[in-house]
Length: 125
Length: 92
Image 1 (cartoon, rainbow over the protein chains, first blue to last red):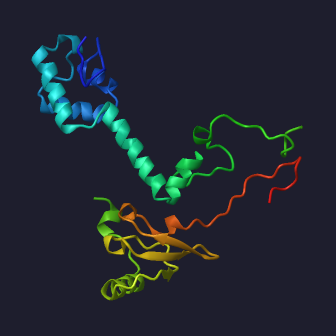
Image 2 (cartoon, rainbow over the protein chains, first blue to last red):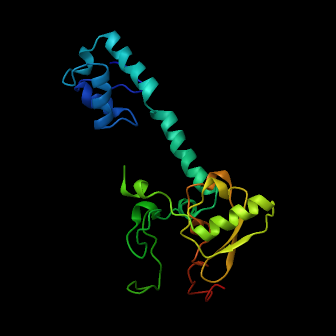
Image 3 (cartoon, rainbow over the protein chains, first blue to last red):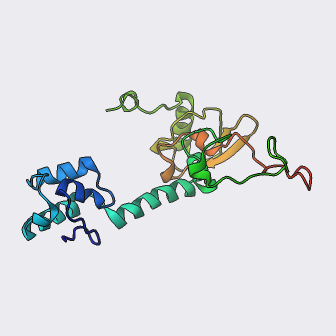
């Protein structure tokens, strides 16, 4: 099992797909990485030579933000919004949708599980 | 290039002029403005604005991090005091 970018261990899949198990690498980035390292995307991850794996690792290291550093970057971006006290930062703080979606109903992804309010219209309390 | 980058940032001309006047004179009194849709450009950094929220003016000191945002983002227009509580009556 090859190890690329720290902890990730993709395996019996084609390299194009196993690369996508790394946080921050999707279909498009996986494609460009393989193009730049000139490895055919259809080869299995276990069939790669050590040099090929190393070349992928170098490519990711130099040109892509991935895993921990990407997570940190995202967190910093959100923290910046919170620090300058702008509208989007406030929405992040309150755990409500940030991009202007309605919150009268739905918005459950941001708000979490339903909290039923007794006595509200339609609820027998 | 998206359509919005082609068009460039929107900056309220009158407000921009006022900021430049202040920059020349070194006077840093807050500028009252209704131009909520005006983008904060690097020249605005260090100036204080009073952005209208429909009711009153909210103080807004522009720092470097705020560049690229709109003035209106820093003057919330809605006041949320929490939901009413049936048992204890309406929260003030």
